[in-house]
Image (tube, rainbow, N blue to C red):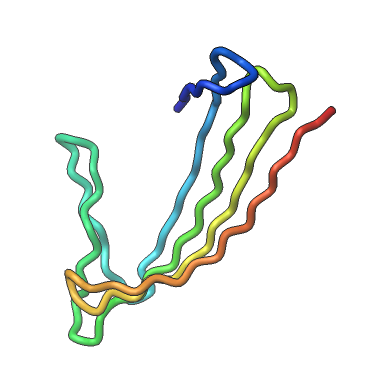
Length: 101
């Protein structure tokens, strides 16, 4: 994944970004994967008491024209699905910004 941006100091700038994400339903539900368009369906609780899912994500963005300019973040979360339309999420994000000089 990449992107571009215009800034006051440089006419054009580019960024290289990537992320990895994993989740697990503690209550046993599974998400459906749709092969025809490459999407993942939503989690639907299989019991009246709802479903609980934990997740983690690591992402990184690097600015190409500034050596060592990097942003990384790590996210952890817990989501409670009351039913197929209502969910509550609590998350924690740890970020690190650096410019090596």
